[in-house]
Image 1 (cartoon, protein in one colour):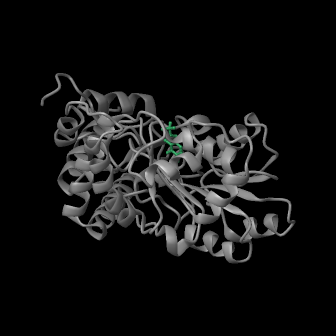
Image 2 (image 1 turned 135 degrees about the horizontal axis):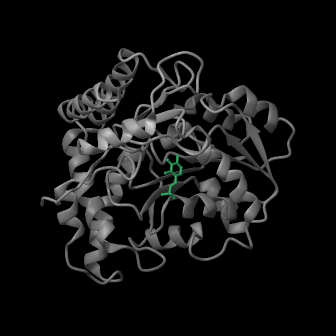
Length: 366
Ligand SMILES: *Cc1c(COP(=O)(O)O)cnc(C)c1O
């Protein structure tokens, strides 16, 4: 499949989708209550469990990630939620909690800083909260928070629901759901899965399901109990995007053919190369040192003191003229940062091709 005039995506979602995945996506429809569908989901279930390092059922929601991000609040917050905020997506989660009518408070750090366990501990020790929201990999700033250290707090606060967005890190880096002991882990498929947007993969702890079952106003479409009951029979509560199921089955084949560790290693290697490209050209990285994302690179273009500064809009246009779309910065750091994704199917050779285009674009900036 050649798409005339297609600009290859190196933005942090949606990312480039392979031909094989598109072919799978285009398979004919089947009934979602029939054996064929159940077999399709049942075949994927153990693969999804391996991917998330869990014995719990893995659920598939026909929605973008925000559906389950909002759903998690509706299912799990009875008292008050602490929203850890370090960038555009995590900041938004507080707003969404309020829109759902939840009592919510923000734990704010500067963009580019990670969320630290000590700060969460100090807040939870007040006893006010029964849930926290955390974004593992804050895509707007390219910053990864120390999930294992944060999850270790769960032992001290067993009644607090730990809701974790791994939208731009799931499948790109190892996240062991059962070992971490967190309560919800979710990701949309247009990021490191490299599928088209519109599907969310998530799982819940038994404690999360117990909490959800007590919640009166959890709605229907994102009711975790409905997901659990249906998934036990290899089905979904409502008619899913069956095309996404085909695409996911195809992608899981790819993922396990490569091997999980090799996949995580590949993402880290490509992120390192991208960081080196940036620093090698005189730029600073935006995230605090030691907390850089492994699936994308957020380059500082004046957002941090020092380092090279260019006309990002012009650079982005020159790169686009060469066939690649990179991101010109998100939210309040648009223009003072730019972002390059290495999520999904990228290889050393494909990322090198991007670097060549960026080198050429830089030399034409004037
Ligand atoms: C992309 C992204 C989202 C939002 O996903 P939608 O698909 O737009 O719902 C949420 N969180 C993170 C970390 C993201 O990268």
